[in-house]
Image (cartoon, rainbow, N blue to C red; front, side, top):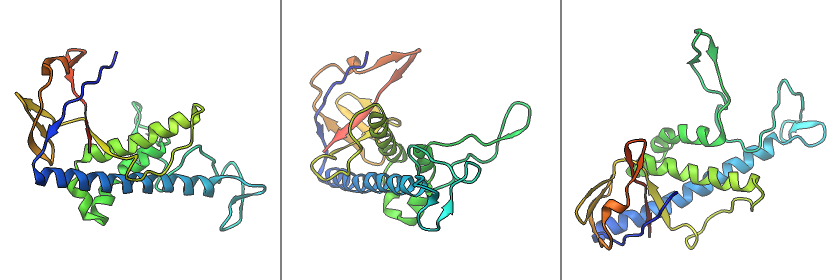
Length: 200
């Protein structure tokens, strides 16, 4: 059973500005990833006798594949070896492709390097969850605007001491300790798990 507890953070002005900027950049990244998947799906979708509308290549199962959700990048893993020493290249999901392209994003757009890497990964996983819900019969993922994209999630590097919390690349900040912090932790096979979502 999962339980959520909400604590109000008390960031200083610099931290508040930084987290607001993160939300704007993460929203832009989410929308870019969604657009990338839509474009890749449209390019791979077989319509009539053609695989790709732009170059009019005929569809053939040996040269063309149609996936539920693709992404720009190599769909196969490189350099994986099985227990017998043979090379294997399992197909990657769209989320895996987009997560492995995050270092390239940070080089091309250096301002993204100011965001914690796990926060960027969780942003792609948020889109994966939206696609999973779609394929289970719920609505298609929508592009986000300022009113419906107001949070991001940390999964690693979080520290708590008394009524202070440390968030990677944001720093230490106070929070209103409205209930005992020991209630947050859940024992998962002898380990303590903590997931922090920050809502702006």
